[in-house]
Length: 331
Length: 173
Image (tube, rainbow over all chains, first blue to last red; front, side, top):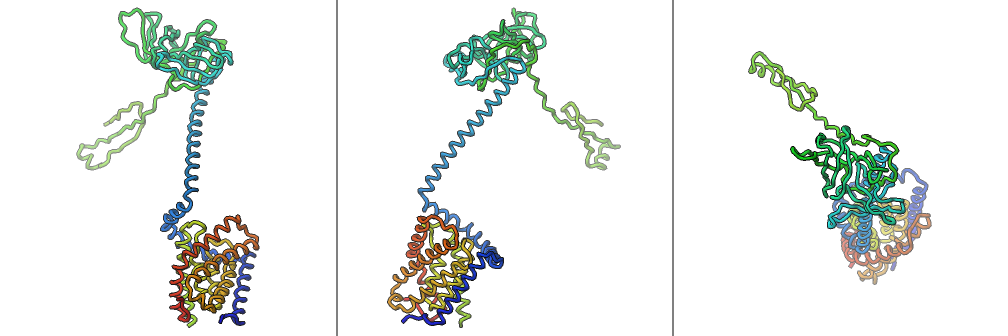
């Protein structure tokens, strides 16, 4: 025999259903009391949930991972691919930033010197197995290049166009052992011939045995007739050492190139020499020495050293910048 | 007597409710998981008189409405569980053959869970809320039913023992 079919039970059920519908209506109408009750409940339950979350989230994640094993794997694979793409993009971006920096330097140099240039990208470095120092750039006859054109980098001379092909050109670097360029010393205008040595250093041979060369002298290209193969005024390098050559016919010096030939990515080929010789306009500015802070300590002498020390346990210290780096003590 | 039963029942349901929001809700089970609170409520209602079933369903539904994870209006679960609690108690209370068979009671509760969830979704749709894709809804409801079939055999003895201890009128064998 079933129980509960009487009027009292039905009345109770109807009352509860009506109450529920009333609550639904109130909530849907946005009555603040109902909303406040919900917020209050959630405020009370919040701490319990946070505690449970820290305790059970590893278990929860485990079940979730097991349940979504296939999806997780696919997601990991997708993220790995995305990560790889982002890394590639980042490397490309860094590469482009470096190339932009080089291009700006090259254009600055060309603009200051008044050279008409065509910029190019280095697409290949010559192999060391051939014992020649060369690079290949991505323009050739299509950019109206011809042999014996000067090639510039952001810091100065890079080399000279050796061969021109349809869409590429071979550049002989200034470090090539067969590379020779006439140079002059900025300021004194004394002239000499620079010869590549296969490294980032070259040998300068002065034409006049009475010439005076010293470390730190800046060398610029003298320039050739009609600007080929070298336009005048291009920075080449700086003298690093002058060996003692007593009794030798000519003065020799070791020179370091301005251009870092291993990292050159953008170059400019001079297609037209400047109208006027830029002379020493392209001499790079000397690096500013880093200021070294100095401190001068003034000690106040007492009647006797012991008494003074006893009377004034801490000496008076006055910081004062001086041009020397050695602390000076005045008594 | 009624006060004592009410207090004890409230304490039991509060514990189950806390277990639901602190443990079960944190464990992301496949196929939508299950609601131990809903299963326990329906088991409790099945063991009670229709009046008690309706009242228990109503207040348990209110608790579910106030749960942080609930997104329906307040009173929606209360409405469903009040009606379902009354119905399940009404059907179970006078049916001796069903009461003597625990397996059938488990299936009965699982079916009630499926009905409760389905009615909830229908009500949600009627009230104009976004209910999601049909395939996903079916997956969740069916998953809940299967989970209930698996979990209810463990919950039912506990609920029966507690119910017997509080009400001392009916017991589950």
